[in-house]
Length: 287
Image 1 (cartoon, rainbow, N blue to C red):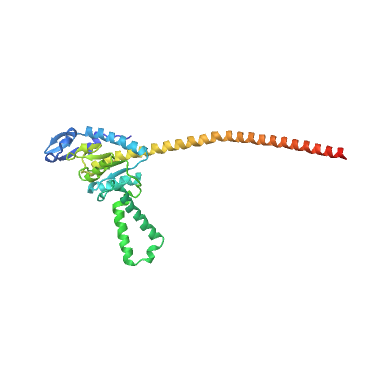
Image 2: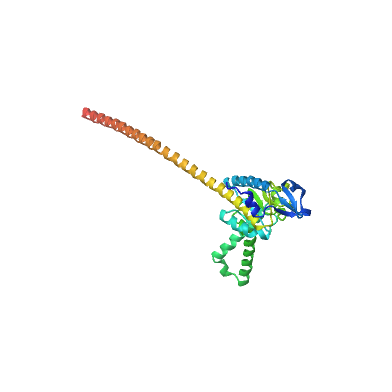
């Protein structure tokens, strides 16, 4: 697993916190000092917590489950979309739809509605509609795609939640905690790290800070997925080898069965020949 150095975190600006008057006392263990009225985050704690979170995310990816990434703030939207699309993880970058986790079946119905509209467009149903109906359905499809398009492939609840700003995404965090879904998140000096399972103390407002942390997280998920694929390939090879090993035994068994059948047929043929000879002899004696 790739590791990030403190110098890299420093260059990305991960150490900048919020104003001293905005701090959360629960962040005291992660604060290094205060300068010019701004709290400075201890990057050694950031490095340790980032490694801990990456190891946990790698295990989740290795098990084949999904991690839902949530970042609706302007600085993180494009970064999340850019980094999550290649690895196939679901993400939310628009407004968090209330009940996405606690009322997941209803969200799935809305996602299925998108596929229904796509089917209508492909099978020619649109051609029988008026121009106004087509426009309404197209607008509805665009709205659904904007809010739920990135989670269209998420068929069940995610195994974990990764949040960029836990203060802004407090509804998502509360829903995940209610369902006992582990929450990973970037926490700034104004946040409560005790409200999530895997806090990563860092600057959650700078794009560079968000990007460098997500790079490590994405790398860990890729490693977990590749390990899962490797284990699956090894299992398939072992099963194939077992099938190949059992094949000669079957053929030997089949040859024995064929020999036994041939012996039985020979015995039956000899018996029928003897019976026929006896009948012929009896007829000759009677004559």
